[in-house]
Length: 216
Image (tube, rainbow, N blue to C red; front, side):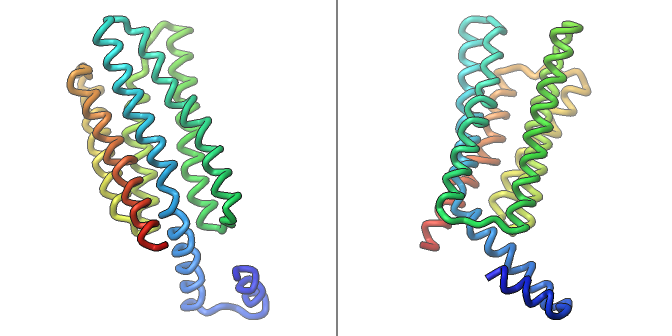
């Protein structure tokens, strides 16, 4: 269908109204496919919550901060499963358009920024012995929610906007605590961190899958 539209665009110049209709149609089709793609969001949400709970329990039980290395399970599990789940969507006959590529690029930038920040934190730790891992929490609770809100605005999906706003609010609160040198104690920060990802990933993921079922 899109190939025919592009052929028509070559034959004559589209009016402003027709251009808006083409863009709206592309966004609508992308949203329809995205609504059925809540599983990837659910995977990231449950992995983040589970790893956070595991780290909290192990550190509280042993008082050994070395258990914080378990945070890397988020990257290992999420980074491994995401390409597999994305590849499955491609094999189901979903063809990417411009809106799909924009969505993919947004999250790719978020992923690369997260990897870069992790590398910087490791550099500070091994070279200077300075603990800068609190910056990673700020990244997870500001950059990730911002990307989700942007996506929710594009697709007009309220669950993404609301969930992203909750995560962003918790992120800004965490940032103020760090700047104000207020210690992020596990007994209150860990529940906040898990709440953020439940609101950002788990609840919207279930809502998207529910909407997909209603459309079938």
